[in-house]
Amino acid sequence: MAEDEPKPTQLDMPLVLDEDLTKQMRLRVESLKRRGRKRQDGEKLLQPAESVYRVDFIQQQRLQFERWDVVLDKPGKVTITGTSQIWTPDLTNLMTRQLLDPAAIFWRKEDSEAMDWNEADALEFGERLSELAKIRKVMYFLITFSEGVEPANLKASVVFSRL
Image 1 (cartoon, helix red, strand yellow):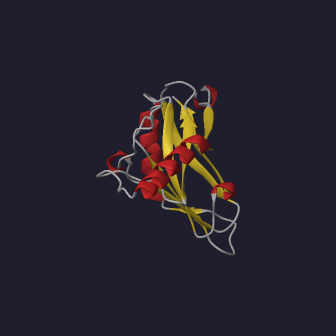
Image 2 (cartoon, helix red, strand yellow; image 1 turned 135 degrees about the vertical axis):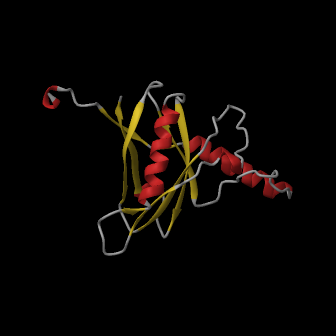
């Protein structure tokens, strides 16, 4: 009977600001500016309104994407872009080809408490995360803040169920 079947365990995996990696990527931008150099061909430089976040998978496992849980405590917009990069201690430069499509975009309008999002892209992106959870210990994201929001205004996680 369906009622006798155990319910899958849900895992709420928070997106955590990686302050050290964000700082290192900002130092790369400053270094290039100071030396009057340009970025490498295809290199993605961290913009002022972008920060690096991470999700730590407890162990590689089969997970099914359930939903995004994104809250902005004020009106604005965030774009969450996944990376295929597995960072190394020498901070291998992030290349634009390492950014995953589609991105998930979430926003909160003035005079509204509800969050809106680009549902189809966000769901597709979430499903891709389920595949990556099988082989990754850590997943990195670039989050772009716009329309007046910043990292302090964001609380975000990805909710999975164990298979």
